[in-house]
Figure (cartoon, helix red, strand yellow):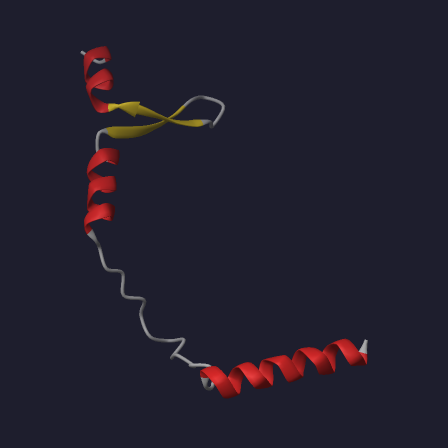
Length: 72
């Protein structure tokens, strides 16, 4: 077991020498989420659906147009 661990540590040491030390980010910093064109297109596609729940607690998606036709 010690041989495996020392081999792993040697490999990571060589990788650290090649790539440099690991970057340590501030864990308290807020996550910045950037919206790209693909994500905006996905949100546009999903905006046509509403999540409904049945009496058993199962969730399913319904198109808004279908929902508006069923409800008076």
